[in-house]
Length: 571
Ligand SMILES: CC(=O)SCCNC(=O)CCNC(=O)[C@H](O)C(C)(C)COP(=O)(O)OP(=O)(O)OC[C@H]1O[C@@H](n2cnc3c(N)ncnc32)[C@H](O)[C@@H]1OP(=O)(O)O
Ligand SMILES: CC(C)C(=O)C(=O)O
Image (cartoon, rainbow, N blue to C red):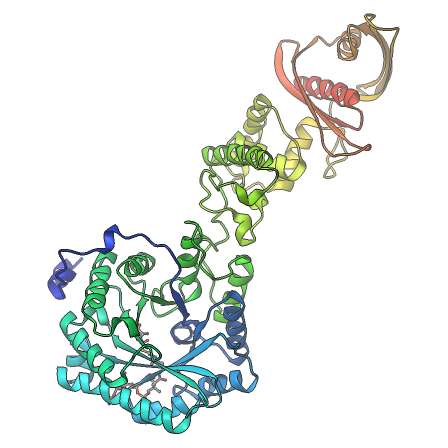
């Protein structure tokens, strides 16, 4: 690896800010957002969006609540131009949404760009030129003065042409970006910005958006924050200039850079949903917004159906969102590993208790759940997908899945026993076991005579019926049991100090020695036709194991559970 080819960023473009203030600041509110999905996102796609997909993206952004949307680079192509026109012709832009469009600093492109905006009630022209030394030397072969002049001349051209073509019909805004701001010598970036400010003359009613892009992310996020704080401190007319961030993600720290840049004083962030955009992408607006949400700060954007957002983005961009993408990926609320599942299951139980104590008011209870930074329900995800079972899973996950999908609340030792059985399957077959497969494993093991999943019944015994009579209080129960024993129907009678004791004694009549060690039962549904589940831990001929019974009658459920344990012992 030829590491000597590279230099540390502080040697390339140092920023001196020893009394930086941003590390001690806290985020208290959402910034202004601009979505550039239809511009920076679109220009990075293998197949740029057609009109229909652009419209679907625009409508999604509006629905989510974005108020500033960069809708394209209208001078780039007829498709881009026509899309911009279609929005005004279809009256598709709500009153509180401002669209913006990007242009280079070339008169013919500026004219074409502004022509596309005729009829928009509010629009911003965004002009950029590269100010970084590499671009001055390699791309433009311009010195500093000529580069500054390109920015100023472009600004003047925008002002003059907009005045001529748009007049008073459009509330017209202006944005300037010194491209690769992060690589530009900071005093020079300020000099160019000030020249643009002096040209546009922002004041209270006439804002200038100064966008400071990390066009290519080349340093740690604290460096970007220093650069932003330095600019914020040195800008004249700071109150009339909206400082905007435009981080890219080349080092994988675009989100952190945006967050620290906001602490450093920026007012606004430009990015794309799920971090679409050039190379490794623009900063991800979904992560930024939901990071705020997870801190109790309203992002002012609606993420309540994250899957719908993801599906639309995937359909528009023809690119997949990674399953581990923060907040929106398929797997990000899912735990496979045993200790995580156990903690989540316990967390949900404690939370349910707290919600009940709060009078059922779910939102009154602060979210504190192990391994889940936000409540999946808040972004439209269901709890069913939270816990999934594979070879890394333990009893907690298995129990959670049976509880959430089948309402079976297994006692702890039964959870441990079942987990071992499931583990044998996952070890043998690999991969994941879904809720249906888990139910099938469970039913085959514990409920062999339940017509579940088309399983083949097995086991020496099947319970056909019971009649119980008690002579009165304090007297023994008398029980008549009809059993199928190895295919042969038998009727046995026994007494005991209760129905279960009598049933155990009846089994002695057919040669089975069973003792009940532990017992648990609960209703599976509410109301008169409720079904009960019974779990009995039994010692059968010296073996300790669990049986499970499900029946409308609690007593019959218990008898079935004993039969289940006996059959398992003999299996
Ligand atoms: C960081 C960013 O994301 S910036 C946005 C980038 N997005 C895009 O480029 C997508 C849309 N672009 C396009 O469709 C085309 O590039 C167009 C229509 C804008 C221009 O096309 P062309 O005229 O064929 O020029 P080309 O694409 O080769 O651009 C390079 C030329 O533009 C000049 N240029 C580049 N940026 C700027 C700028 N901001 N201001 C003025 N001139 C510029 C270059 O110096 C070069 O000029 P040269 O040909 O005299 O050497
Ligand atoms: C045009 C500018 C803002 C840009 O896209 C970038 O620098 O990444």
